[in-house]
Amino acid sequence: MSLIEVKELSKQYFIAKRQEGMGGAIRSLFHREYLTKIAVEDVSFSIDAGEMVGYIGPNGAGKSTTIKMLTGILVPTSGEVRVGGLIPYQERQKNARQIGVVFGQRSQLWWDLPTIESFELLKQVYFVSDGQYRKNMDIFTEILGLDEFYQTPVRQLSLGQRMRADIAASLLHNPSILFLDEPTIGLDVVAKERMRTFIQEMNKERGITVILTTHDMSDIEKLCKRMILIDQGRVMYDGLLSKVKDHFGKMRILIVDLERDNPQLRVQGAELIREEGLRKWFRFNKEEYTAAQIINRVSEQAEIVDLALDEPEIDAIIRQMYEEGF
Amino acid sequence: MWQTWVSSYRLYFQMVSASIRAQMQYRYAFFMNILGWAMSYAGTAVTMWVMLHSFESIEGWTLWELIFLFALAILSWGVCVLFFFHFRSLDQYIVNGTFDRFLVRPIHPFFHFMAMKFDIGAFGQLLFSVLALSIAFWKLELSWGFVKWAVLFGAVMGGALIQGGILVLISAMAFWTTRSERFYWVVMFPTKSMMNFPLTLYPRLLQWFFIFIVPFAFVNYLPALFLLEKSHPSYSPLWGTLSPFVGLIFFWFCFRIWMAGLNRYKSTGS
Image (tube, rainbow over all chains, first blue to last red):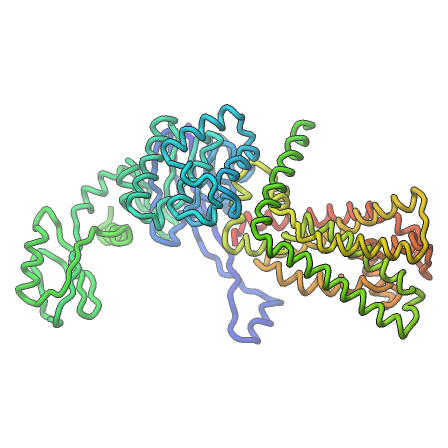
């Protein structure tokens, strides 16, 4: 049996419908109408010990809802979840001992206290032995440079520092599974790299299973062999990342600002996928044409003021996967 | 079992001491808070004094008896604030999503949330009430045996549990409505002001309500009847000795509702 088993998992929310105006507000005190929102629908996958899996999708796709069901925060509407043989929502506290969780947007540290004190408190919360605590702190300090800001209150840390402290805190009790919800959001390139190296190391050295949700394709590219793509609550793709990359990774997007609009603008080998006034987006296959060729062809027909080259973002890839099927 | 209790106990004190250190980071706010509360209660006491100057007594209670009644309520409120005052702002934790962290840790979420803060702002209440009680004690020329001291202690504990129970109940509202702080100002604040005066001042139905439904009468009025040897036309002063038991039962009831709310939260995640 796999370490994490998810079978036909669904989650629906009931959201109170807002009614217009003062009359509506009063009416809704006594009688509310509810809308059903399906956050996750019929999701199945299994993850083996030691895997690093990217769980990706656009905003509101159901990523966080799935993670919340795996960590025991939410009870599923239907379906099965097993994490290390436990049913998270029934044995939440037991499950909490075998998992580490990092929510990129929210810290789990004590806001007003020097950073080191959060570690000491978590040591107590998880009943971590002195020996294990010292060993872990030595390793984390070495890789993440925590000692730079041990005495700084968490609220004064930079985002990069705070994320480093948060991920170290989530691993203090030697969990076998690590859930990372947007661990690199808002970080600069150097800080991102540092986080990724650390995650990789923990996976390699300790065999920690990592489930990572992110917007950032480069996180996945650096860390995961496998990705599960979810959109509108459903699994769109579950398999090797390399397969997706071979297929979609060769696309590039050229963004140009023109001096004057040219409605007749047609570029051979590139597709106009978006336009906003004088700004145009062209998608082309980098194996067929070079960026220089495409730029040349555009500039033959219109004066270019500014340009940028982009890789397709995850949203664009998903859209393309929809259109072409996968 | 015994070991879990001991380690939970230690954990509670560690978290509480962390909370105190966190609050001490804002020293100015801390002292102003204490001063503010003490001044505001002193203001209420002065109002009583002014009123009693023209009325002599209210419902047969003299000035210093009333001060005693008032200070007893503030004393148990102070103890309650230490442990439970932050429950009213559970809605903030739920709305910004930080409540989830209590659910990914291997300890009981109620215990965890309770241990998150130990509100030392309560020293304002404690300072004022101990001072006011001592003066009233001296002015009323009281001399108590063991039983009365025990009843006073029981009233403070019971009162803290009853008012803590209400705070827990108010906080549980956040699980259903994502609001709790405003319920505090609508429900708790006016009710507490009512308790500053003898219960007989209010209609019979309201008296009944504050004894049997939301047992605020056990916070100060009923124990004060016993301690000051006064009487009520229908309820015996001996009822005042029951405060700690009423407090325990009421608090347990509120705790169950909070847990029911938590279960709802887990299925809606609102």
